[in-house]
Length: 559
Image (cartoon, rainbow, N blue to C red):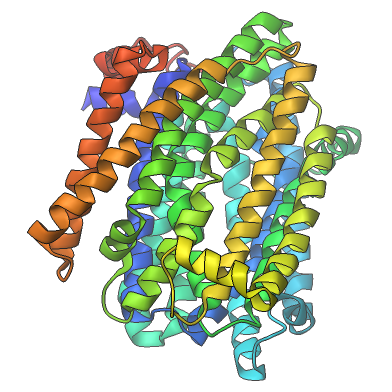
């Protein structure tokens, strides 16, 4: 029991340990998310109602991103660190947190109330291609989901404390609780309330997400209180620094709203196809790119604030290499095994074989940008750690506009240039399936995201690395290993397909699983022969035992 409690309260100072811990919990959360999507696919499948459900997320998500990021972890941590005495939360730090809590809650409630009232007008921007009946459903669903940004925003605020003390174990539990709430809505509420049950499940998941972070924050010594003597100068300073980052994130959300708006004019179920594939590609992204970026951020902040520029660069280098090391093999595996992955995870009940092929093709298109998305998450945090939010803003603005333009252009070309149309369908093996035009939306998103990474990469090398290329060796080592992973996995599919067959779930699973394992083994051998430093570091990390690592900070009761 003491070991269990120690895991809950201990601090993880090693970035690899923290990232692997968060990655492990993110994996568990993503497994729950996959069960969530499987239940949705099984009971409902791509349909007008499910399109309305997914479209309803857009306004609450935009509010969460636009308002919650004004008091986000990446912006607040540097301010709190300045007011702390070592590892102790001072009166000044508590005052700042209480001021932010008061202003943030008031703003979230006010904006959500306004959105509730004007939702009938917003729906024409979200889903202009929907019928009036489906638009009415989007309005109802969106209004219920407006509870989510308030609760998730507060959870994000409390998460600042748990990340500041590097309590990554308990911090990582929130997404698990969130997905558990949504699954509860699907399994228990959907049979009673229909599609509305899914929406209630989202609100329940947001409440659970908030509850675990609030509990963790209390354990770290911070209990929020309403402040009646707010230091608006400090709040204004935080808001001004946060504003460029907030706008940058908002632009990405707006680009997704535009994609959903385009999809509302396409075949019924197109929004569902897009969201299913987007969620699947988010699994490796969250486990790898986001986990490493989040784990590295507190260390980057402290290194920069302490004027330890070499240490800052070294942390950025090592984290970037790890993201590259993991992401490239995942990209090749997802592209080669896409049909097996989609069929095993989603292929049951109302989810047809045509749905499987379309989602698999969309996953392949999304997958080419997994590395770019993960590296962008890290490189943008390098600027946030340095207190510069303007550079990510300009890059995100340009790329978000580009995604919107490319969505229209690709759809136009796909519909009017038969050669391009047939080339895409043949390349992704979706010939003679209706609704393939939806593939242009993930293509636009991936192209825009890759360019976003390239621009971030250029500016980070110029501003922090003195034009040093710090991932080149790892990139080519991982790329070479990934090629063999993909090749061996592809050969394995051809060998095991006649043996296990493709007509049963277990046959598809065994075919893909064994082929993937063979590919991974081949990749590890190649990395070993190339003397990969990242592989050696990974082996060292797995040899350590998290519960035997010394606690860095004082016990909770001494704070």
